[in-house]
Length: 172
Image 1 (tube, rainbow, N blue to C red):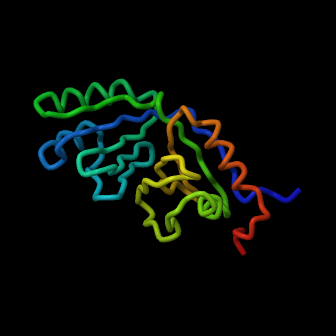
Image 2 (cartoon, rainbow, N blue to C red):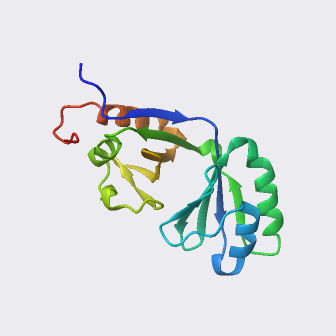
């Protein structure tokens, strides 16, 4: 059997906080509590352990080590206490997979109807993987894909299947 195009692994130690607010009004408060600058549209900012991603004009996603989740959520809620805003722990409703290796892009190209090869390094792309809503960003020599936990087995299966060689989309 031929070697897989990429390694697929589920990430178990991530916390995720969804932030909804008027970013123009609350951006400084969010940045202070999150420890990261507010990203530009379609982008992320990261300090190596935390990543803050732009999801929509009034929505951000903060991805961080699960051990830092409670304190950071409390800091965000305190910082946003005078704003019409929401900071919500969505860790248990999301699942994350790392797709790593030289064929990581090709695995995602089999599944996603978007040009991930043209995606800037610090971008966050909301798209679909075989009709399942997901978000994707680059990490090291690969990518992280997040989706709904209710379809974690499905995502694991399609990613693993797409990592199998033999479809003509392998890197040359």
